[in-house]
Length: 256
Image (tube, rainbow, N blue to C red; front, side, top):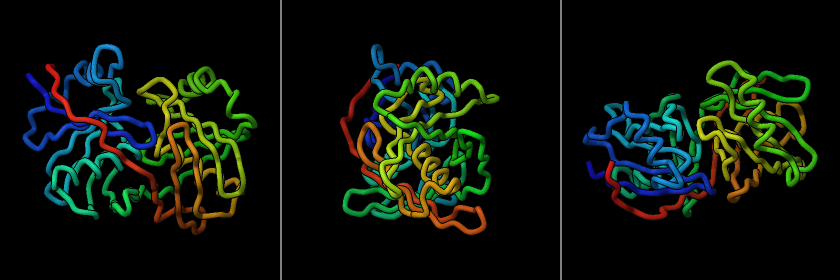
């Protein structure tokens, strides 16, 4: 079959976007998803996102990692919102649903803000923090991010967690409102240029361990800049928003 696709990226996190409102995409075939994401033999992407109709919201977002595993992706969610606007499904505000539940999002001055899930379970360890922001995240502070072996250490830590494992974020404190982040993503099994759920986890983790008392955090990543804001009450983080750009790259057709 010939498949029409759209390519989007959010701070370097890139995705193959598919309008699946006709439900013709073979979702159970993980080989096709892996092929689409293959940077040598396919289109090349960190993941595949399907947009489908939903009875109770504007649309349903279905996200697959490059290995075919399903999860939630924050930057993918922002790209899905931009894609839904391109498809004329929404205007500048939307309520949509993903694997982790409902989300609100807004487009303003080409910046897309997406409301993330509330975070109430944060495990503080000796040298790291583990939390769930739509998917699993390990957060660790390091001194020099430029020279840090993100791939090697990220891979080790990723597999130290029980199935399905964890994404691994290494953060460097720039000031009390700015934390630079590099992320090793499970499912991609490599460092990516950005991770939306990852920077969300970093912002919340840094607030939890009192490296900052700010509730609006700047998070430079390899592919650009993201922002996270939240409210905190008795250790529960609500009104969590991930903000950043999402850009259309190109449209194409591929035989699968």
